[in-house]
Image (cartoon, rainbow, N blue to C red; front, side, top):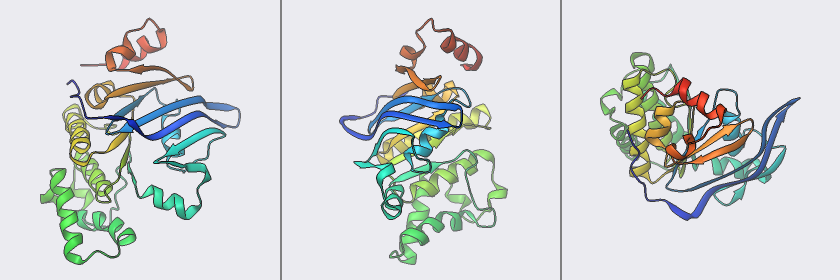
Length: 257
């Protein structure tokens, strides 16, 4: 499935990274990374497991500090922020984790209410209920509002995880391997949902994946991380029109459409 063109404002850079380096002991993971994410854009960061994709989004969100380089998110340099300011910035960033990160002891409604209780204490009961029902309807699972996570399929849990993120109306979405562990049909549903979120909520997103179908279906632009650097970027076709054996091997092993 080809990605439809999205209205992207290339004069508005919501994430700007320059010269980012990160090592763990003797292991150099990121070796001078530059990245721009524009308003309204779905940017796919593609690469094999262990190439530093997840490290990148942890640095963007302030969960890890860079060794070198500048990471600017929504006009703020992340590693220079106080704990209070970093917490405020994180309210503008939504995270979709591989395992959906739902609380097993809570119903779907209680899971979605949790971030509102913590961060939007001014809302009335009626306003909270409306927000919960709106995002559940947005991901097509309003009927699951009183169910427990254990009663849901993997794809449904993924949708609920995205709904819980959207309830805070983030400006930026970070998806970490959104189709990992899902069957092909459910993966297509999640890819479509990512595009629907972009369109409905005007989000700017970074999608971390090694799934080429996901990359082709959701990415307005693709950047490929190889040996700690972004060696290829552009459309899906532009990234893979190369004789670079590292890229060809990745394509031949993974791409199944």
